[in-house]
Amino acid sequence: MAEREYKSFKEFYPYYLTEHQDATCRKLHFTGTALIFVVLAWALLTQTWWGLWLIPVTGYGFAWVGHFFYEKNKPATFTYPLWSLASDFKLFFDILRGKEKLSPKG
Image (cartoon, rainbow, N blue to C red):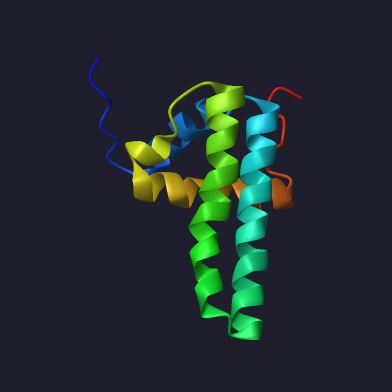
């Protein structure tokens, strides 16, 4: 089956949310994204520039564990890398603002 081609982020984001139905997967995404900010702050404050390499490892590591072991689907990053990355941040900030829940069914 051919992948759907999304024309806009507004069109893509609802699809992204359907790929993140498992509560543990969402929690892992949230944790990984939060740790991105921690690693970035640490690297900038200590001027430990090699630490910037930990950003994708941390962010994607947590997210991919969520997809492979809990959601049991292929991360959208593989097909839609930029929109998926933007969606990770949107989900993170929506959860912080209370617009989305860590458990979409709860």
